[in-house]
Image (cartoon, rainbow, N blue to C red; front, top):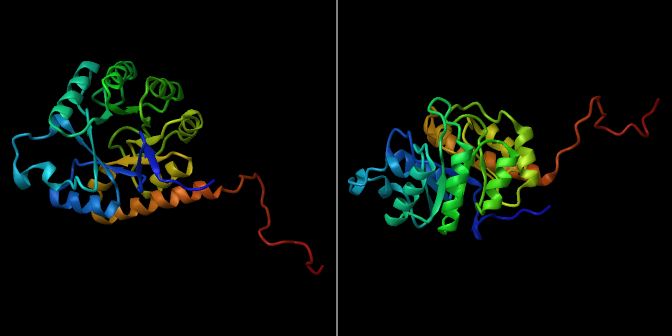
Length: 258
């Protein structure tokens, strides 16, 4: 296998790390973390954006639109109708026709509502949006979203913001096996090893926010995540050795003096 850039809907990116904008102590630190991460796609919640804020008080002031592709998301939406309305608002505000679709089904777990997500995706794709849907780690749902015309599928690793890491690597591997669009692991990443594992499984990218924003040293964690994603991708392309039940000598035995 040879390495290539991450390609989503025909657009190429050098980084396989997508990053968020929430929970940072300051907007200035957020921008520094964005730069340290090397990410080229940044997502932000449309419903939580203060449209009245101006200058340095505005979130948009701190996002480098020259370098970053904006990915507005529908966080906080619990119905397809709300999510569709939010995406249309993002377009009207001139943010982006690319959207991260989130339709939540439960306030405690923040798991996606699959039925409502599929409903919203169907409408948004027909309206010409580039849809990247947050979904469960269910291969069948991923295939349905792909078949609707979504530009990627974004299965969760664990509940949003939990930091539990990848709870079901087998399902993520199954999704990667059947998907013909990029698989972007979203939600639940806690540290750099989680990001590396996602890429080692063959997933195309990782999206994260809390793992960086709430780290004791967010700036250093942003750099660690950048390296982890690169290492995970290299490991996947290198091809790991098979797992074996018993020891296998790493030094040749031939020619040893008895």
